[in-house]
Image (tube, rainbow, N blue to C red; front, side, top):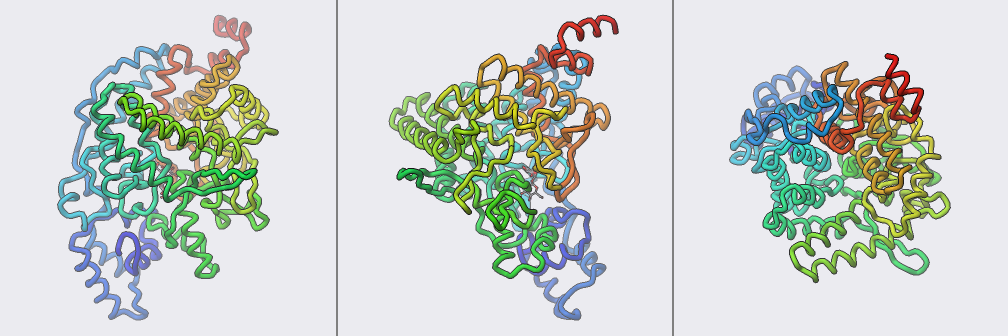
Length: 551
Ligand SMILES: OC[C@H]1O[C@H](O[C@H]2O[C@H](CO)[C@@H](O)[C@H](O)[C@H]2O)[C@H](O)[C@@H](O)[C@@H]1O
């Protein structure tokens, strides 16, 4: 009550005292929850209809709440240092100096939670975690689960191993406490997770440090998270007499999201109570997917993949990327057991991996189109729209025949998604939602580029490099214009931040910086900052060389 549900939350949010509903639920209490609720009850019982006027609510908040941000103390990552080695891999001088600036940004995104949050958790929506974190930035003041994978990879390139290790330890702590990892570090995120990337964070850390003791300590906790997904987020499907188990996002909480309360309330206006509850649960499942929100989760009355936000049915879709991610988790867990010499453990996850592969190929792989599609449980058929997530099995290396990789490349080339100057859009549908055209998101670009690179043919590697070049160029151009990094970008225009959805585009930005650093490190010997040279990289060859020479 107060931060997640109840009358106080309802009255404050519907009075729209702040531009963003997240503001109120991030405020700190000045008195105990009981005292605050009793004072509220007192006031409302003496007001007409038990409703306070906006001015009374404002006064009430001034008395009992502090502005957001009081939960952190000043902190600079102690392992930050000038000139990490990877910078020397970036040949283009302008990109190298920009990479240095990105490396500096970790200092402004670092947060340490005050001990008072640990000692008086009832006064905060912030959840205490023992180690400092790198946050996404802007309105996202707290840690976020899947964002942290790209942040940690960036930190490891920046040689900030202590900070990366601390972030992983926070997640292990959250699993011990909740049985799974929350969407983000606030009490209002307590009932949902996000794409399960912790095992891969540990893999990145292990690759950088070879620390077997850390791996040994983490492994039982990683297994616990894996079981959470298998026990609470799985569905069985029979195909040709064989039962396959696949995973989906699902949250059984039929109330508006506290941090976007009025959006959810307004969207559900006019629906029956049951339909409202089910829509709110589906929106929360959408948030759990990390793709909040997208036409990808729309299921219309005919069972097709069109509609509006009101048609969100996330739990009714078996998503390609979630299953590819779990497949990669299974492979990685098996490899951890092998490293630690535990053959039985390795065999357990090798078996899970074999079963996953069969399930993905039976239910999600489309042999005609040569790619993987999300599967709808509403009418037991695929949703064949384009999403970069359709190629996630490449990134996870979760497919049985090398030819499938080449076919998926062909699918991508024929999809129309490669025609945009700044990267691959999240979908080809402009729904006004932020996980749709024209937005392109850093994690999706990175997974696609890595996936194509892993196909290992010259053609696939060239497409991967070309996408990396386009992405770096748009990030860099936007940085030149705004001196900022954004959570998402527009696939059109010259360095244009993304838009749409329920909040303003945010600056900072954790995963964007992590992805840019990874691409700069991987392709640093070839990436260029100027558009003349970009045309060269796009294959205009000799004419281009002559042009550069003339200029
Ligand atoms: O407040 C609205 C929603 O905001 C978050 O989602 C978006 O930002 C996250 C942090 O960068 C990112 O992980 C997610 O993919 C974005 O869509 C939050 O995670 C949602 O739960 C929340 O409802």
